Length: 115
Image (cartoon, rainbow, N blue to C red):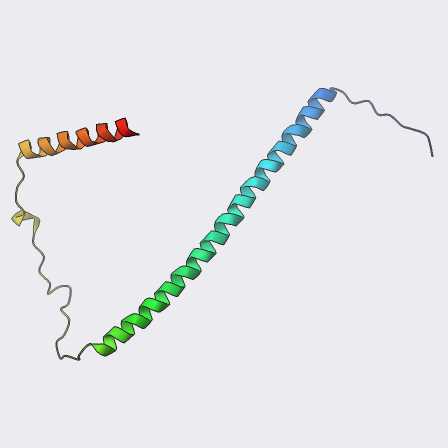
């Protein structure tokens, strides 16, 4: 039982490199999995908070609805609501557009300088 057996490995440096690269990939995969678990937990917590807020809003809305006086007015159907058309919108002259674009570029330059 005390006999030792040795096995020859061709290119031991390549084998060692492959093992280390595999270990590195496994560790990176485990790190990504941990981040995914954290994101899922955060998502669940956020969804729980959202549900709580929605329940509270529904409760407050029902209380508000109960406090408002009842009327016999009906809500307008979307077809009955008139929206202003784009034809009625005031026309902006090209010079005004150019001025706005130059002001926008000035603002962007200032933001870049401050960053």
